[in-house]
Structures are given as structure tokens and as C-alpha cells.
Image (tube, rainbow, N blue to C red; front, side, top):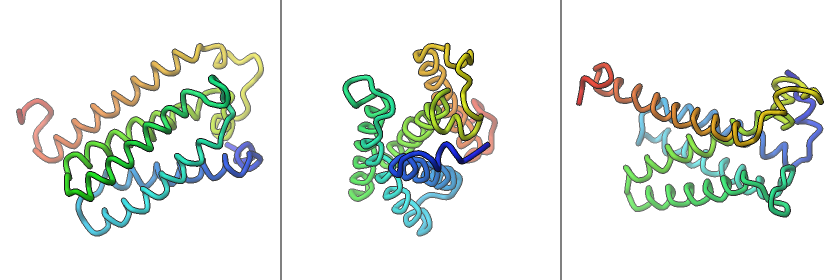
Length: 179
């Protein structure tokens, strides 16, 4: 593992990466903590600001270009921005269940799915964690659609697993016995 690929990247990519890492850590912390506490509210506010910086900075990154300067990852950024705004307004209107669901969707679909895509061969974070991709690497020969399908499966499986763990923690019963 070497931070050299990240530290040699542009300032906007570094800002984006570091705020995304902070947001991911805060999100995991928040998922494991009791909701509605003072800590939850303050960490949530900080998380929202960090996520907004992450999302807004993504619009200035054009490493992948599918449609002009844009890529499918920018669609994920737009969706994330909408989710964050909807979740913020939901909690301001005291719609706690809607807020909770929107936050889960933002966490699983935006942070985890986006994190998955950052580790594709040839991307900066792949090079940080696994080292530079070899030119003849078989990883780069895997079609992008395969990575997308695997990423969605990982996120959906993670959501199901997390729901089962939370359900078991709240009921104290194995999955399927409390229904």
C-alpha cells in the first residue's frame, strides 16, 4: 500500500478521496450507534457537510469520460445529492422513518457502491491499495458491466445482511423467528 498515487493526484481528487474516506468512517460509526442522541445529531450534521464536499468535488473530476466530460459515476453523484437533500428536509420535518431510510440508501448505494468503483483496476485508489495495475493485467480485461453487476450484488447483499443483523439485535431472535 502506498499513498503516492493519491498524493500525486490533483487537489480536487485528494479532497474528494479524503472526504469520502472520512464520510465512510463516520457512516459506519453512525450505523453502529443509537439513533436520535445528541451525538447522532452532531455527527450527522458533520457527515452531511463532509458528504456535500465529497459530492460537489466529484463534479470537478473528469478522469472517466463517457458523455463529454461526464461518466456514470456522475449520475451516482447527482442521486447522492438528491438523497442527502431529501434526508435533510425529512428530518427537519420530523419524518424520522423517511430520514432513516434515505440515509441507509445514501450509505449503501452512494458510499459503498462508489467505494467499490474506486477500486477498479486503473483507478487511483486501486493503485493506492493494490499497487499500480500491470499493463497486461487480466483485471483490466474484465468488462465494466461485470464490475457493475458485482458491485450492485455486493451492496444489495450488504443491505440484506445488515438488516438481518439489526433485526436480530433488536429482537434477540435468529432471523425468521421473530416474524
